[in-house]
Image (tube, rainbow, N blue to C red; front, side):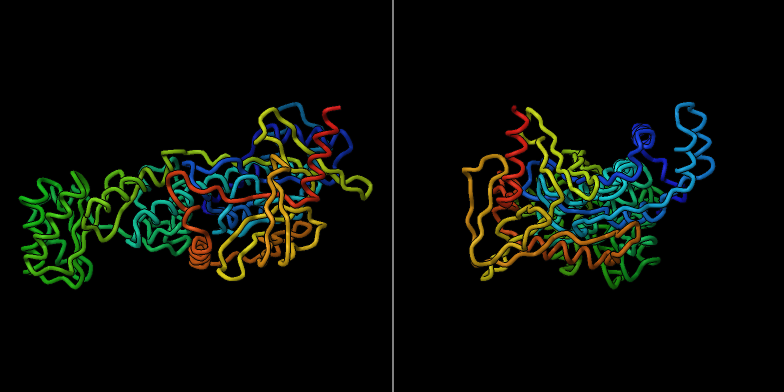
Length: 476
């Protein structure tokens, strides 16, 4: 972890009171299955991006209760001494399965499952949700923004607007997974190897008598990468002319201008003409200033002349919908070697859970390699066949989809076995590339910003039947 604190106690207090309750109820070694899933896609989008698993792994590897933690719990005066002794000797023993980072994910899918002693499987809920909810949210937002930029690089500029130090660092990581080219956050470069990028602030320009002197000094210091901020006073009357003068005199190896205010479409078109007329066709134009996927899409449609974007607060905070909404629910228990499926029932249909220990498959068209649908199955079922396969809408059995000429991929991988990590996290660049390939496998209709086609996430017949039978039994 980036922070050197012991994060074991970064949990909801009721996780500890429930663990004590299980201990006092002689349920210490009962085995439970918990699924993490989410119910809706941010911004009414067509897909989300899985991120944060590497930090979950680090957390689970380092679970331990310090003497200070035990003394704190003892001071509350409500915990059993034998329970506190159990915590002081704590050893993580759970199995974990998860969808790899960079995978496109959809509502209702078990993106992570924990199986193990009920006290342990319950206790890790808070940090699993915290880490995956945050990074999946930012990775999803970044993916939308990068797609809106239509091939132009997007730099994550949100460090100073993030909600905490870790939100800045892990947000930069998630944004890179989602497709950003780099970050303004230097620590993210140190920790993860994400390219740190940046130009100058308006204060640099204000330190000098005029823009020409400020730009000239910067070009002297950075002759191989000279990007000048031209909107401190007036973009077209003074900023761009001063930049042109410096570029022609100093001839930096790489040159560019950045515009951080005003009418982006109008200013970039005018600036582009001025640069081209001066023979500086290779000079790039970078824009920033409270951008998101919709503004980026609109200015490109208006003919703005932009080579790259810097996106800050609306990316690092996912300000349009700043909650991912993943939940962690019990799906089964094991007693005396028998698995007992569990279901949560609600008047809100979307809150009814899928029972049992499950697997998750993505079905691809053999001819195009495009994703056709995802299917959630019971783990005991055979891999879906590519000849003829029928999947069921989880809300209505009369909605069925019959597939043929497809191949199936199990989206989940084992991460821990009996508390031992068996998964090697890919590099950040491998995750980023995998996310890009995932996007390529989806139909464009699913990737629309407005009214995207709903991607099929259905149930196998066996899982649908189990769920339906449990719902019917609950009515009696």
